[in-house]
Image (tube, rainbow, N blue to C red; front, side, top):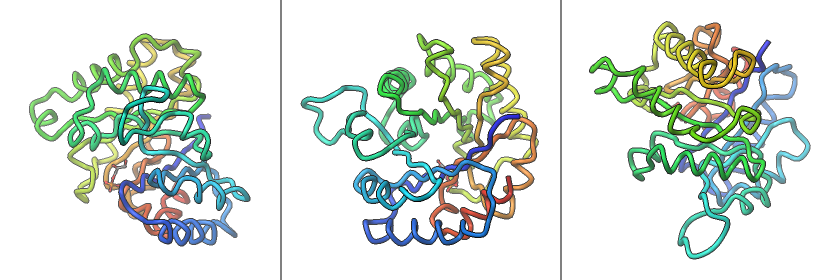
Length: 251
Ligand code: 13P
């Protein structure tokens, strides 16, 4: 059976105090609950070091929201892989739709970032998903296929052993309008079949594919009960400890 992974993408929310409070609330919520899912939190860069210190005595894992693909140098405003490692990041989100749409990241850039993460032993959470226009235009599978093929180009199966894929339909992010379990399952199944075609059945069979896009305590159980949905990448609902942990409990 595949492991289940619930990750909270805090996006640009919570200053240092907010981080201390939210992590302490999450830890409190988790006591007395025996969660089977692996839990990851992804605070902003500036709060990773503090978060890491606060998470030392817990099972909660730490991730960053972005990475740059160079090791060091004149790249004003960017954060290198070794910087992320040095503050305790184990995971890194790559290719989030907000990075793609607001900051112009394309599949080529995302491919470089995934390669860089792997080189530094950071575990990539690779985000893919179609826009509403693409879904309505009937090209969802085509878009997903291109994102997967170009995002993972030149990377071998063994290098991807720590990969997590997150299917996040752009139209479901922050809109309150989640994909139905059937819509999500259909795409997750497609992604797994595609990974099997590119790599192998055994790799595809153990790959964790998260769903993201308006996941809340009310819809988590139904989404997560689908056979190819192995967890959630949560935005808005991860900013409150009780709703985040309720989602994890739904696994
Ligand atoms: P929401 O849960 O707020 O829709 O955000 C999802 C997301 O983008 C997680 O990466």
